[in-house]
Structure formats: C-alpha cells, structure tokens
Length: 357
Image 1 (cartoon, rainbow, N blue to C red):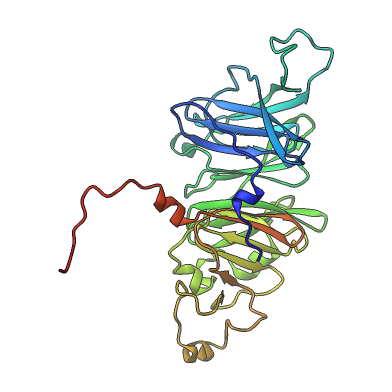
Image 2 (image 1 turned 135 degrees about the vertical axis):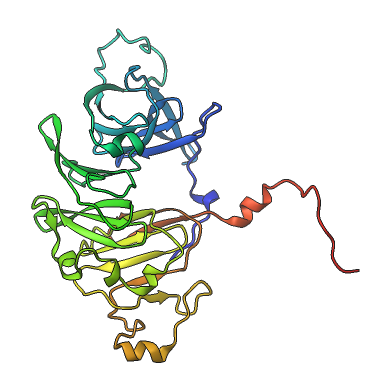
C-alpha cells in the first residue's frame, strides 16, 4: 500500500452553509454531478474542474435548481448513471430524477446569462412507492446500482421478507423485479457484480453472514447454495464473533469472483471460487486486534488459516475507515480518519485529576 497525504492530493472542499448536517451524498462516476441531502432539502450540483497557469487544479460547483417535489430530504442517494439519480426520501417514496444537458439556446431560465450557471436540468422521471409494514417503520438505508445502470437494489436494514428489493430498468421506467427472503440478521450492505453474462447481488448481514443471489434467475448463487441457507452457522468463526459490523461491500473489476466486505476497522476478502474455511487468515498475522487462537486446536480441525490458499482473509491494517472502494482494476482506495487529528480539535479539559506526587 502507498500512503498519500490529504494535503498533497486534495483538490478542494465544497462547504454547505446551514444549520443542518449532511445526511448523505453521492458523486457520479464521471465526476461532473454531486448530489447531497441534509434533514431539510436535497441539493444537486454540477462540478467543473479548472487548471490555472501553474497547473493547480480547482473545482467550481454550480447548483442545479430542483422542483419543490424533488427538493425533499433523503436518507440515501445514488447515481445509476450520469443521467439518472435515485433518491430514497425520508418519508418512504423513491424519487428517480432525470438529469439532462441544458440546451444552449434556452434563455428562458432565470439563471440565463449568469456566469457559472449549470449546464444541466433536473426533472422528475418516476416516483416508486413501496407498500409493506417496514416501509412505514424503517427508511431505506442502502441503494446499490449495477455497472450497466439497468438494475438497482434497496435495503431498509430490518429483519423480514421484502426488506431488500431489486428493480430493473424497462425503457424509461423502473419496475419491481423481486424481493429477497428474510435473513437471520438485518442486511447492512448490498452490492452488484457482473459474473459472465449475468448480474449477481451480494449482500452482507450485520453479523458478517454474506450471500450471493442471481438477479435474473431470482435464486441463490452457486456459492451460497454450497454454503447453505441460513448460512450463519457455516461462516468462519472469526466473523461470527466479530465486534464489528459491515458498512460496505466492494468488488474488484479485475477479479469479479472475489468481493470485500468492510467495516470501520477491518475488511474481509471472500473468494466465491473456493469453499469457506472454519477460520480466517488474518493480515497482519500478529496484529494486536487479531483474535488469538491456539495452533493445536486449528490443526485438529483440519483447517489451518495460515495457508495462502485460505478463502476468507481479514485485513486489520487499516482503522477508522471512512471510504473503501476500487478506483480501477486491482487498485483500491482506502480513506482513514486519523484519530490524533481529531483529538487535536478537542477543547482543553475543564477538570483533570492529578495522581501521585
């Protein structure tokens, strides 16, 4: 791994003025659109990148006006493509927003003639209203989209059927494809991956139990069928007794058979071409946060996780992870929160007890 200082790679900061904290945000894959929501409204921006004479890069955001029916607070937002933004509102419905390039000849807009005005228009494309008991109790926590922009999945983080749902694009409309069954623990994160000519959905529960579903066939994938359903008792013991819970799932474009399930303090690598071991391999092997196990017991179980052929590998090298994803083939970006920098922002202690003489 190569450590990069934020001061050397930072392009800029987009600050939002107001009394509300941001709830969610997402940037399009092309890097030209940014969507963010606080507890009051949804905001959409066009981002332009400029270089000065010295070669320094700067960013300039321009706010795109939204209709009142679209500028509602959202729990999570996700770009399915540069033209499609999927927004899960706090009230329950899913708003699909269409983002099109503005006609240069359009002078009717109130932004006409203003320097830096956005070159995109946003319009409502569809409103999806899910109907079940969980829709009124739990807002949508996670949205995942496929790489081709034809599928998206939602999860509310509850326990029960119809909690995780899959939608597919049919022309200009999205239709409900199917709902996944109830699991033994709440679903924490979902992610799509392309496997051959088909699309599969990976999901991880709060206890690190992971499943792979065939989207088009509406059934368990071959890897999950081999593990069994429910799969908790067949998962490696290191994951079943983990103190963390998954927050993200990512797939390496160069190795679609492998996927990563990450939390704030670790991530685990699964290889769906191999069976699950009883114990996971830990990297680094002697990390202070690693679970200590007796070597003799592992040999009696007939499964030594120190083998390089071990399927499940837990990485404890990073901590306080704010972001983890692949930016290209075999190239992953991890953003950590340096706790010492956070401590420096704390005010002085009001009272401190002194011990000793």
